[in-house]
Length: 156
Image 1 (cartoon, rainbow, N blue to C red):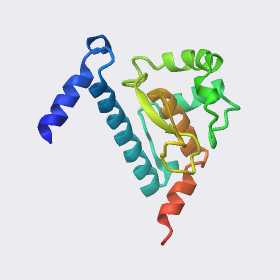
Image 2 (cartoon, rainbow, N blue to C red; image 1 turned 180 degrees about the vertical axis):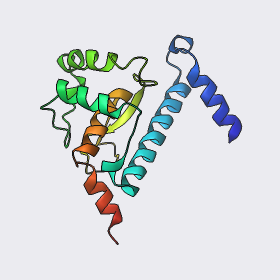
Image 3 (cartoon, rainbow, N blue to C red; image 1 turned 120 degrees about the vertical axis):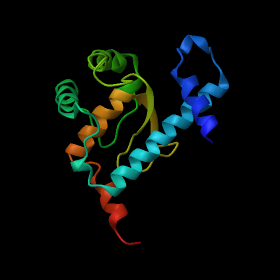
């Protein structure tokens, strides 16, 4: 209810050092990330993704992303391109340039590996919010999310 949501919002606004490894907090973060993923998937299922604007700085994010990751296969992401030590080193300067530009740029969120499929355990990876924006803005602009919209538009 409202009281629970208020408590969760307050808890999530405190610094991480205040918690250690609180299992309840981890569940709240997972729920928040899942809710964000569900809302986003419903959005690209309902509206032509090529017309979506996810942030006030989509153009800057997209340009910088494609300059830094011109060869990244965004249709079917390889988790190693986000999670290995080398990948993290390449992503770090890209992500950090959005500190103070994109709210909560380094918060965790869920990202689909295969953009033509829904969020499932097998098709989901944990990423930072700016990685999510960069990849999803590119998928929207380059037409990779369009099949999701077209599939939901089709009569069953």
